[in-house]
Length: 326
Image (cartoon, rainbow, N blue to C red):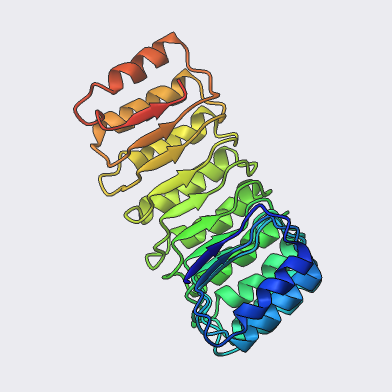
């Protein structure tokens, strides 16, 4: 047995305790355990961590999202993560009622054993700026090889974005996917993030900033940073922000750059009207970019802009683009 998926069951703490006994058996070679949404609380996390400490070297992926870990449960899990024999590469703890203390404990133990972890999913918890600052101390560690970090809807504001960007500028070359949607970045937070994106050592491929209170100035900073380092970014999620036509014009200047390798661009519900749609169409006609998906739902194109985008799909440079949401 290498993979066990039991999500969406009512295991609860008592069920996880039963499951923990085979996990501590040295003959167990399980590599991936998925227990999302299983009504597991602190005692279940304690049992699971204790069992895996007895036999830590095989487990590579642990998915525990949608449970009631809280800070106390994360504390138990931390005792596993600091074990030098722990080789965990992927840890999912989305929506686990974790607050600042849990983020502090997690960052502290991962700094003592940072080199194996590649994916950390912590969305829909209450990190706040203070929790993200603790996590940033891990990210700036040169031994940290994290490639994917998910912090959607974690109550992060400008100070948290500042700390995150500063940490990643110190150690930028490993991160490939950064999900920060549904936080209050604002234009100022995105400007901090842009200082990371323009670093030639930054190899980020996927950036999610859905519903982050970003306006024209944020779009200007983002586009400028990506124009200076355009060749790595593949996915940009910017829906449900206030780009407006002026913000989209800044972004269009990125799309017409021949070095731009963007494949997916999400701009739904971004207050774009005819002027912005025309700027997008012009940029895409001028550059046979690798763009494959363009999401534009929930905006206000007039009949002329809709006609323009329909014709765009027939243009030699744009036949491969799927334009969604018209």
